[in-house]
Length: 150
Image 1 (cartoon, rainbow, N blue to C red):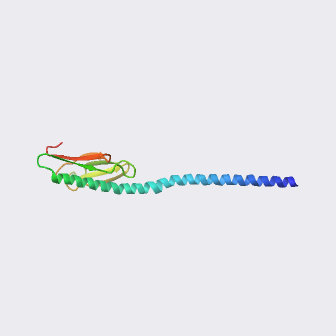
Image 2 (image 1 turned 90 degrees about the vertical axis):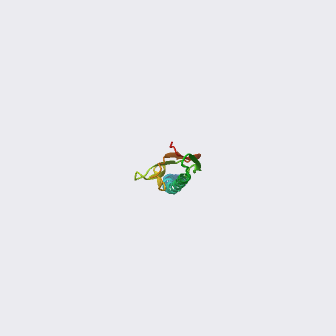
Image 3 (image 1 turned 135 degrees about the vertical axis):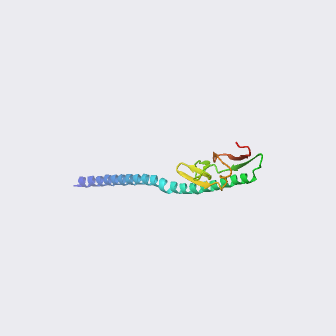
């Protein structure tokens, strides 16, 4: 009779160990699933929203600088200025392009990365002077005007 009681106690210990291992395994699996979801929903969503706002600010800054060059441009000659854009937004590179807007006389500054972009009007000078070019945020960027054209 004593021998049966000892075996039952040993079985109870193994059952508790198996229960602990199973519950720990399930919790670890749920933790991995949560980590994957947290990255997508909690970190990337706000970063994309911040990037969109930053792209709008960058586009407005470039537009203002181009208008400043246009206003001070000489009748005959050249003028250049340098603009220092942020190297990256939310830890990633971006691309700036100045191109045609919706109407043929309009021009837009488009700041983009992947599927996030912002279009800012070029402050109305597109009808009088054609502006074109592209750049990235890395390094110093140059805005130039030449009365003879490029």
